[in-house]
Image (tube, rainbow, N blue to C red; front, side, top):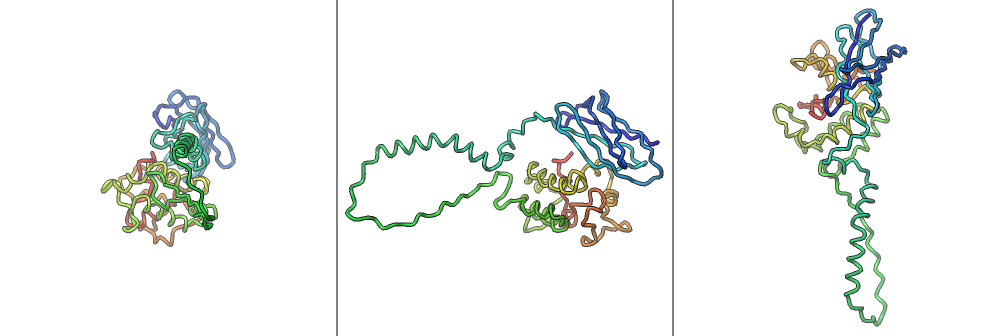
Length: 299
């Protein structure tokens, strides 16, 4: 029997959450435990050999959003780490709440606020303008200029920013194209399209400071959802935190990016759901720069 442990904490306050229900689905068998006052849960798994196997974890706690993630069960690493839950009633940060609203809701709010003022102003102007004298002949008909609606992007997203193509590629299982599209979107967000790569956070943090957390989390959530928890920046960051390596070598090996201790050619990566956990996105690391997992937006 192998004892696996982990902890459940509040995402914002880092305070342990007691009484949370933790369910581990391992080889079709559900294991259930409840966290103690320190937020700690424990599972005893009958796991023969030293192979690394996969399981699915669900965490439920009163007042928090349901959390789930794919994990690796390895006799060499029995600590699942921290699961950070987000409160269901947590308000969005003041600087981000407007960006989270859909365009129809934004239009409705603007109309409700500006509409009455604009109507009153137009009525006042009309009331003080003298009537025009009658025209002797009808004016020629002029075709009205069609209205063009220009959507001004939020401050944290440049003109032309969209994730529609990325969403379509991921939904179609075109993982390689989606990987390259992810890199293109991040370069646009950081204003590094000409250079073609994002600089290391430690060497020059300006690149990642230009990419807001909501934008990066939106990209990550698409990867996590369409890969059923296998791919994404947050998945890669969890593996990095779990390994706590001194160099990138062990990290790259875990993600399956190396062969014989050398970095694989990009075209030789596995662009399918059969790839190792956290295998994608990878284009950022293969462009002489860094991927989104290194951002402080991910714990």
